[in-house]
Structure formats: C-alpha cells, structure tokens
Length: 264
Image (cartoon, rainbow, N blue to C red; front, side, top):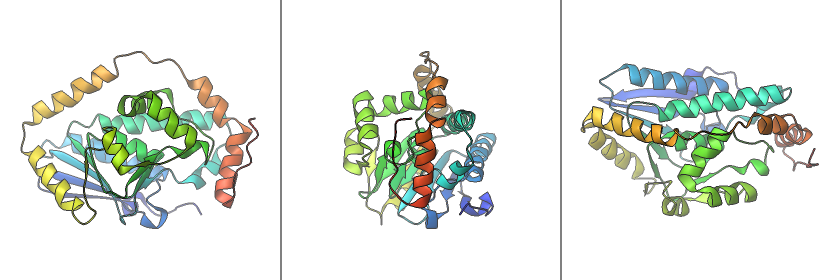
C-alpha cells in the first residue's frame, strides 16, 4: 500500500545545541523512503546550511533494524517507462549530492540495513558509525532489475573500489559491518546499546572544531572527486527502466514472488 502520511511524521528533525538529528521514522517499513521523505531530507540539508549556529548533522533510522531499506518499491508501480527512470536517477543524484554538499559535517548512525537508496544516503555522509548487525548493499540485480546513474556508480567506486562494487552488485549480497569497516566505508563499529552515546560524543567533538576548516576540507575533497569528467549514461538508464525486466521486477516485488527475468 502506498504511503499517505505526511513527511513530517516519517522524518523527524530535532536539535540539541549545535547538533541536529534527522531520524527516518518509518520503522514498520524499515524506514523505506517515500518521495515526500526524500524531499524532507533535502529541505533539512538546506535548513542546516542556512543556520550558522548548527555545526553537525546526524542521520539515523528509527527502530534499530534499519537505517534505510531503500526506496518504497510501491512507488515504482507508477513508472511508465524510460523517462520516469531517468528522472528518478537524476533526482537521486541531486539528493545524494545535496547530502555531500552540506557545509557541516554529516554523521550517519547506522543500525541494521542500509541498502539501495539507504546505502546512497549513508554514502553521502562524511562519517559512518555502524553496529555489528549492520549490512550494506545494492541488491538491484535480485530485486527490481534496475540500475544506478553514472554519478552514483562513480561515487560508490570511490568509496569501495571497482572490484568490490561489481562483486556486490553482481552477487546481490549484503556487505557485513566488519567487511565494510575493512573496506573503509564504515569508520567504527559500536554495539547497539552504545552507538547513540558514541555518535553524540563524536558529534560534540566535531562541533567544537573550527567550522571553516571543516567546511573547506569537505568542499576541497568533494571538488577533487568531482573534477574528473564522467561519461553520459542516460542510454543505460533508459534501457534499464524501459525494459520488460524492470516492470517484471516491480510486479514480482509487490506480489512477493521471485521475478522471471527474460533479458528484454
């Protein structure tokens, strides 16, 4: 069933001193993101940047079992073809890019799974703290049969390397927390009953540091990463989202059955 609740109920934004915490609050759906939730996340990034007294943004998921379990799949039933896929990936690039462009340090407090769009949100943060139970991945080859944008592929390659990224997508497996730590994607693994305190401690430490230095460092690294020209990938996105396999993947997911891939 499509979600109809207001984004304000599913994305909670609170403030404690110089630290703002944004909580994805849809635990009954493992915090799967609706279009309205994505928009609220974008707007919160704008609000954080507009207030010089805010020094750190923390992203977390409610319920303890998921950070964000991707995009709410029921929304894909509205897609008519390639153009919808192109717009979705373009919007996704804008959302992920907005997180990485926040002028204040962003910490992702990850409990449980961060997959699909949730993996992308976590990747936009500057520091990622996870629990031992956390899992990460892009199981699109097993679920919907969709794809990423060239920009998203490039960003994940920077964080994971091309070999590990290909293996993750081709096998549709989820990356355990310890492997994500070894890969450098996760910065710390903390027990679930201690992660809240650890993230708070880290946020307070960062909030006490020189804000201009923090912003310039973030911005310099972002500019270096984005300085290389990327090839156009719209044809790849159009082929994928315009395929019968993508439509079958969405139907199968909604109907809770294995998809029947045809390669068409």
